[in-house]
Image (cartoon, rainbow, N blue to C red; front, side, top):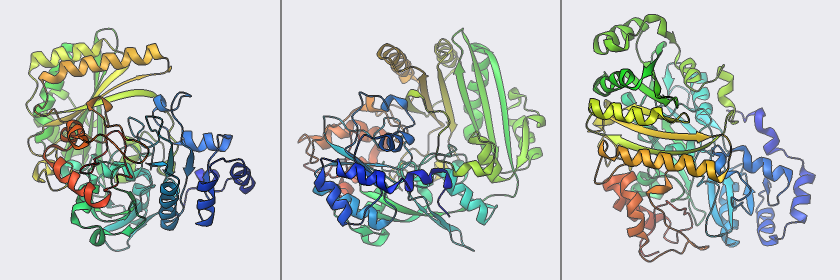
Length: 524
């Protein structure tokens, strides 16, 4: 797949500008190393070009302000050789490494660092090629390719093939797949990481490894074990899945008092996780600030409109879903709709139309929330205009895959996942503190309704409230780092945490790749 003209300005910045930047850079060892290694696409100074490159992929504006630590360098490798040499040069310069594929890290961990540690960003956006193997059910996607670019390339090759991943088109495949990657097709085909059959990983020593050479423990770890711990995945080999020529998408929004909407959401808990695996029906509930709420039910069905409406009318008559609320489209057209775009061509754009300030958290539900609890939950939400919940149904293929097949463990027994989001428009300490405090209080209230011992969370929805480990400039940390990281590690990965530590020890014992919620090696 050709690189996008949309961001050629990022790849082909005026050469004289780079020369000017380099000549004024005080980190001469890094620039000399990059130059001598043939890495040309980088900047190390706070110029207009640097700021544009840095801010282009920041999706959460909490991490775009002047008070947020900025990288010493920002490198955009154009090949696996560039990627390898960038890692080696950054190690030689004693800079911490952050790897960014799409910039959607909820806590900005792909482009920030704490404790005053000097760091650099390896931004993968120019590594965005997608090659679909003609006549097969496989594709290779570089980690800088967005989900939209993968979907576009797959549909261009065969409109009855798809890849099961998330609905946001600008999300980078590197971080998404590294965390598992739940999406509309997951009840049928599992998460994105379930459908990875090989990968090319560049490790901290600059070795370029495939599945065989990295070993099964490491290959297991990179598929759902979170980003920023293992090295840099240069590309993924993806298993594509069949979809019908026409699928059905439905939307139904119901607004009103908390009781009336709670009755629908309460019933949804019993319906959505138990639908046939070809059916996905989520619900997003938004507060109004005045005591009312609205619930948007979104359906995606690998079936005709008639069959979809008939099935839901029998199983969920309370929703009162009319055929006019549904339409038949191709799979790629459904992707465009769920991404909130106007055309298929927009899938190849990396630019986000609406970055905002936000804080998010997540949960899993294994026992339906009773009616009284659902009313209280939505009543709590109704008082906050800037907040909403997204409830994603599990079941189907999500229940059939064993919890230790890959690090993503949230399988059988989970009815649905909850994503909590609060957002604001002005970054002021008082505004941020007020909204975040409200979300934490709401989350505390919800503890009675969700999983326990541990209270589980989804690593794609990073949440630093769950605990952190602070690392020094050379990856040094506390002697009890494995124990400290267990606090968040077992919430994200449940019983898989211990195996992840062993995999970390095998691939990155020196802890070159780290962040406040990375997996630590033994005794580091």
